[in-house]
Image (cartoon, rainbow, N blue to C red; front, side):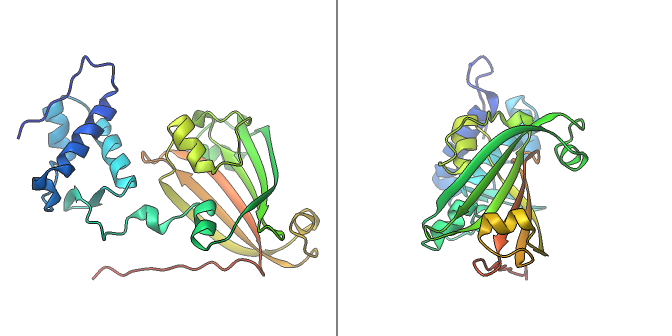
Length: 244
């Protein structure tokens, strides 16, 4: 089968490839499980870079429309297939899935100089300005998590957005930034005076610290997030499935 796109069109190449892939997986041929052309061959046929094909493919993998298996290939997803996004939920999605209504108690933003740790993660010069957001969130009855987020300058956030909306919805719909991959570190610590005041607990009480590194489909870092949770209000559950 010969594939083609319009190189003279004002529509971005990755968007055209995305449309092409959507048409392919909606056809009976590919609905039945046939593997898509590999990225190298498709890029050659279309006269574009492999990265452009990968960008479009990543978008459909993120949406759960494609399943990619290393060393095997990429095909249309079955309706019953669980994709990575189902295994990683944003805070709003987590709480919504549990039927918990969330209240934002505090939302503050400021531009700060990046520390060595933040700069190394974002791969930017130390001291470069980044947007910092602090959010105190929880149930209607009381707050139970204090978030501190830093955003890569490329994301485009100004700090004046309506952060009553879900964060990743703002990134995707307003800035075309998709949060695809999350890497996390979880530890326990004692609450200091500030965290105790925020979470309505006593200094020295145990809290859960969850540090999250968030990347876009191209593997570029977009958010560095730290969440401090009341130990009596949050249980972290990990479900794993072994490949057989």
